[in-house]
Image (cartoon, rainbow, N blue to C red; front, side, top):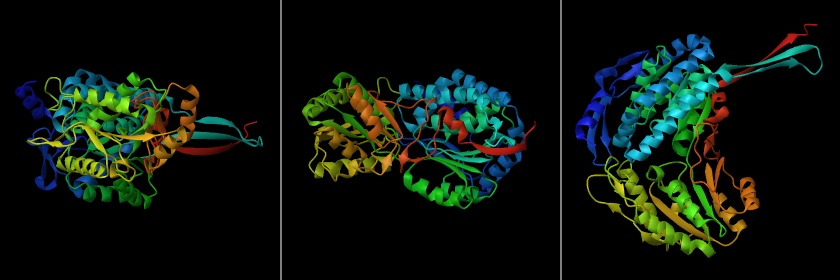
Length: 489
């Protein structure tokens, strides 16, 4: 990977806000800086939106809504499909851009381009499948028509850990349903979203249908948008505490909301599991995206009779991971997003070790310019350890032993979160029982990755509201109307 290519790519990324079909500077010409977490080096300076810019973006979305809602489903689908095709043509650029601004290894960034692109393709196909129903009422005195309509202008807030996929997972169903949007990417990784919106523009999206604002003052910019009575939908991916605050704001306007919040995923290993497959699944569930995923396995709950062998095997696999900048040859673990993430991971590991856990490999931050933390395995993590309660968001695999099935279920469900769980067992009946007993919105049975554009992504309990992806995803942007007509006979 050449420095020249990176420089040329970064120069091509838009650096302004996109409002009403125009790339414009932020009011007062305010700017913010983007940094590379692998070396904390300056990457690019872009527009820093103010609340006034946020209002202008919502104005544009409101103005564009009637005509976009009236656009045929086929035409909306074609815009999404053209954007998908353009993304495939530029997939290497997008992969490199995500590696630069977020830090993930280039191979994983390519995987995100494929995954993120699927939301564009999937919802281009779902756009033409929105259906209602028609039929006689039970009394036979009239006919009932049930129809679906776009909910209206939407505000989409995306996180830093999957800059492309989280944007396409929200934009695509909104556009397919006939909604217009204002999207605000995370301050730490805004460049991918700016480039994606440029593709939508090239694909022929009408002015004002998608507007993007980048800002260093998210709360100040977001609150007036959320409280504006013209906004009808809020979609947020991020931490549960922030989601709770946004829900309070959204309650004033009784907004439709989608909240994809925190997780504390259990990874349960029974003594009849195929350990080769289990360790493969564990490595994907834990170390994908440097552990910085809401679906990352947080607690490895392993039956006591196989816990030592499981720990030995994963330690050996972790020993083969290579830490470094995501563009370097053979790197499998990149930097954490910033120093705060390093400090949090360090504190969680130190707390666990202080309570009696053992470190089999890793266990500390790496010095130097970048924000790196060594891939780590902890065994005999004790009850009460903070690492069992908090979402780690780092490359730390924490192992807790259990004795029987009831014990495993109790430990797994002992959390306020309920996003995803993983179970490894060769018993069909036990797998079916786990589907019934585990309190999560998603489950991987003998697999370490569950995300798919065709599947309804979302959690139970404090992990959120609503679903993204699947046939369910487009309905988050639709509202139902019932009409009664007289009996025609």
